[in-house]
Length: 378
Ligand code: NDP
Ligand code: MG
Image (cartoon, rainbow, N blue to C red; front, side):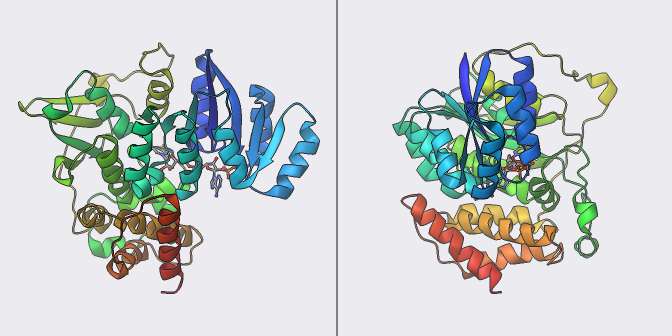
């Protein structure tokens, strides 16, 4: 029996993880966490009987504890997240929280020897070097949940790292594929929240429309698979059937395919190294008909180009790329800025930043606050 904690169980990935667990009976939920959606967390407590849960707000946690009695312990805040990520009885943490808030609990989990099923890409983007060192030092598994990285992880099964020429990340291109710069300026919040192929949380849906999500995934891939910037390619594939590919030194390319359904990579991470039967709809290539591929337009989708710049600059620059984007997307979701401002804000913050090297999470959080200040005071 695998015993796990899910950070962010009320979100898109969190809920789909629970769907997977309903099918796979050999996983026990020890802890769940939520931010705003206490009502859903309560339903999850009744169904899965976790030993403890975390709510970010202290008052809400107290109210929930009264309702739950002694059956489930309710913790709160960052200390709560760290506690449930390091419980002695768990062996794996699913990091399905959105944003850099996931950094400290992930680091704490690794330090206490827990395997990680990583959805929260922002942690690896901002602290890749630190996290990968800790993963080695504590000999834990970092299992990708992001569909592209799960695909690459699967393509690399049984292969030597030295045999990899490059990886090819696929991108759907989002709702604004084919748009000109001018047309992007008119985009509304409602349009940006409609992804053609995937149903996801609000922040990643906006990130997918600007291609910043692909930018974050480029940086995530660099760390997960120990690649140089030149070894990472992006190709637009609107059908989202090929989830990503690896090109080997002999010219062979291996791809992983499936319907766009996050339950597959989630299940793969939870069951690794096993494969498990499931009842989910299957890909029928005859029904799909045509798979197409095209180069991304880096002039129009500057959000992706800036990620490659951040990688070239290295050090603390990816933190600025990520934190400026988190702040900007937050403002866009509150309709405080226009769509086109998101990428401008990232660009401006990166231009102002002098790269340093972060030795630990405190340094990372400091650069994050610096960036948030720059964005706020612009
Ligand atoms: P959602 O917005 O749907 O869910 C986020 C989860 O985090 C919710 O449980 C939410 O709680 C919780 N949360 C939000 N803010 C905070 C906070 N400040 N403190 C503590 N908890 C918080 O996001 P997704 O599930 O879409 O994405 C989660 C992560 O997975 C992201 O990093 C994303 O990039 C990545 N990912 C997502 C994919 C997807 O298909 N959705 C695909 C690949 C990667 P509540 O709902 O209770 O407020
Ligand atoms: Mg992805």
